[in-house]
Image (cartoon, rainbow over all chains, first blue to last red; front, top):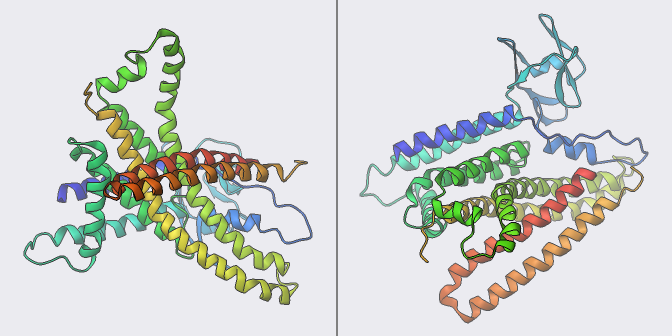
Length: 343
Length: 69
């Protein structure tokens, strides 16, 4: 159990670090110049990653920006950018924020490994995960006492993931995949749930994070697949040659679409949930035209809040469901790859 | 961009497809569970897998619509 914990931490750290290097997809668009209130920029601002942790109004926590270029690191707080209005001069380099991205004025190359909002949020969730699971693991030292506290909550969940997801889909050789799948389940679950708290970052709704998670699944499927799996892809037995010419390309394409679908599914589900919640809240501001018509705003508000409450409850279900689906499908794909032939 | 609503129509169409697909999966799974309650755990797992696969295709449509604005 202790070894599993250390491995869990290492894997979580890896998952945390890699997305900062992968260039994040940004859905920024120019705000439209119309008279009516347009909620789109505010919504996209809330679901996107940023260099500062915006809490409310003008209050935001500055996060460290770390830029690497030609052997030296430029480290400074994101508050130096003054919300994108100032430029930061470091030696012969001038950094500025353009469309939520840090760029160098003379287009010099650099690698951005900043602690962004998503990375900071992931650090917190990994710490929380480590504390919760560590406490659970430690409480097994005293075997005579019945589970209580956080252990009593997590034990059924861990057993459910192990027995119903991992064991039943991978088969007898399930043990070496337990570490990865258990980590993925709890990592997605805790980030989904933390993402629903007000002011938190949208970690699992960031396509770089889900890309890395599904990349791990892809690598594990590819390196643990047995001979039968590859044989069925490259040369399906008992198939006429003319069908093979169609089937083999589709099967090879299928190797990549499985993890790709995992990536898109988690990203789109969580992002769509956040957009729906923000859209329903925005209805108040659309109706009142950003505070001009107070009566209309107050009359829409109760309906809007009720709908938001309803969607929030659904999103808690979705948080569990998506963690379950990601782990389940990963287990099914790994199970297909390691299954022994019995015909 | 002259036509603004076209992406929303695409998202709606993909939602219709997913709705029909997941509805059929859920309905058939319920029928199967009512006939053989002793296998309901296995049916439920397979129902989730099939629903997730259908939903995945629908979400591709939604993501494309989102990118087009």
